[in-house]
Image (tube, rainbow, N blue to C red; front, side, top):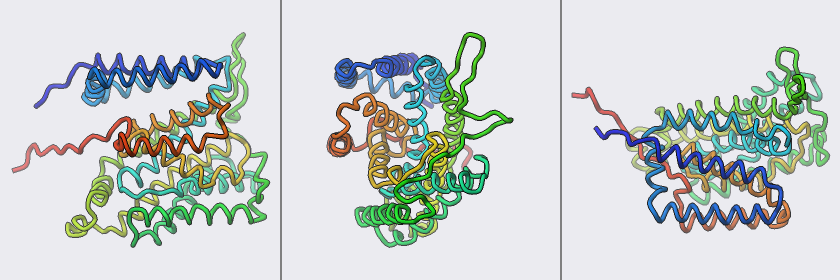
Length: 383
């Protein structure tokens, strides 16, 4: 059996990336931000050319447990570094919410090979159901959240039905149509608020304390967004555990088989109908949870947050980071949320930049920044 490599290279690589992220988020000047992006890109190219990138990724793959603990520590510390800058914590919280949605989309795009541009619609369904139950019926967040997840899951099943006999770009076209239909329905219904949206969505309450309130501890003032950020991080950790369990289960194996060869999968006895519907349902539940967290975080929900552009953005995140690689999905999401926010001067070109990123990744590195690892099977003990 091959001995695991030293975690030193992975630790150094992770520390450099973490330091670069912290510095980039702390800088407010546009030109310095652009310079940091160029310097970071040059550093990545140098690391790839010298072989350090491959050694670092190999070290991380061989020491997954240690690297996971390190990443968790880094993530918990990050908001504390910006205690006096709530805006940075706000953006980081948004990125974590979108990470939950992309983990669900990765089930469909990465694991099952079904490109779904309607994940923004599922995100919106979870958000709208949670918001409507909160504003009009007064239900607490801990009831509206599972309700939003269930509604998104049911919609995923319904949307999965017309895609069962489609493949590749035909399936993508169906999901685009579903995304636009969902958007138009919500836009034109009066009980959803129409184009005016739903305001005054309340914050979650835990043990009588409203999450999102400012906390004062002596001379230290903790901004309200900090408490919500850590609650979202807790949900992201649960989403990662669930996604990992699904990926390593028979569900994940069946989805990978369908992605690689549908005909062979059917010959081996797999039910394509059931597996595809399960992929749509599980992925939609993740998006519904993210939507509910988003609605209660922002306090307002409108149709702009479930448009086709959101679905396209989520697909770009998965492809950029690395399909069927949970760490890659998180990296892609963080990059496409944080970098555009730091470069708001180019807001008018945001969708153009997303399209360029998608095209360049598909041409030069279709496996993404962090490619998925091949499945390993332990046959020890078999006769």
